[in-house]
Image (tube, rainbow, N blue to C red; front, top):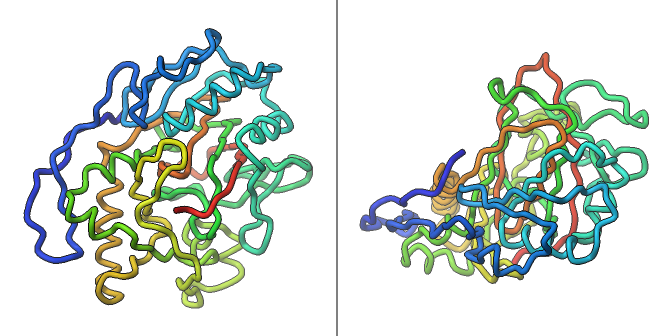
Length: 338
C-alpha cells in the first residue's frame, strides 16, 4: 500500500512550462476520506462499516452484499462514500451476477458503454457489463475484450478520448492472477496532485485545455488486437477534436483535480507553441503519477472496486500470458468535464 507523503521542496520556475511543487502533506486521519470529509459526517446507516484505506484515497466497505435487496439508505450511503473517497472496495461479492451488476451500476446513473469501431467491447449477454480478459472466453458466445496482458496499462481516467466521459467505473474480479506476478491495480488522488502544485503553476493552468490522443491511437496503445488489425502504427493519427480541462472541478465536492493522464494527454493548449504544450503536459503527467498520491490493490476473487473517474486516475500491471485474468466492468453516468 502506498500512503500519502510530502511533496517536493519549492524551487523557482525557470519557464512557463516548468511545474514547481510546494511541500504539502495530505491531511489524513483514521476517519477522513479523500475529499476531506469524515466518515462520521456522512451519517451512514449502522449496517455499513467504512474504513479509509490509509492511503491517499479509497475506503473499504463492510456489511454490504450487493446481491441483496438493499434499502435506499444503504444505496445512498454507497453513493456518498464513493463521491468522497474516490474509490471503494467491497470484498467477497461472490453472489454478484452480471445482471445484478448491471442493476447496481444503474444506482450511479445511466449505464455508459461504447459499441462502435475499435471501441467495441465484449458484453455479457444483453447487459452493459463488459468482459475484460486476456484468454479465450465463452460467455454468451462473445469473446472477451482483447487487451494484451503482457504490458502495463498506464495511468488514465476512463474514456478520456471521448468528449463526454463516464463518471464511475465498477470492476468485479472473476478470475485473478497472484499479485506477486502481476495484475495489481493502482489509483491516484488527483485532488492531492492539484493541491501540491505551487500557486504560479495553478494560475498558469487555470482555464487551459488539453488534447487527447485519437480513439484509434488509444486503442492501439493499450494493445487491442482489433485496432492493430485495422491500421498500422505508421498510419495512426494522434489528432482529436476532443478537448478537456487541465483542472477539473468535481460537482459534488467542488474540489479541483489535476485531470491529465499518461494514456491520453498529448498536449496542453494555450501556452506557447505546440512544443511548449507537450512539455507542460509531460511535466503535469509526471507529477500526477507520483507514488505519494496512490493506493495499490492486490485483487482477490470477487473483489468489487468502484471508482470516480472525475478525480481519480488508475493503472495496472501486466501479467504472464499463460495465466488467466477475467474482470466484469461496467460504467455509469456521463458528463462533459468542466
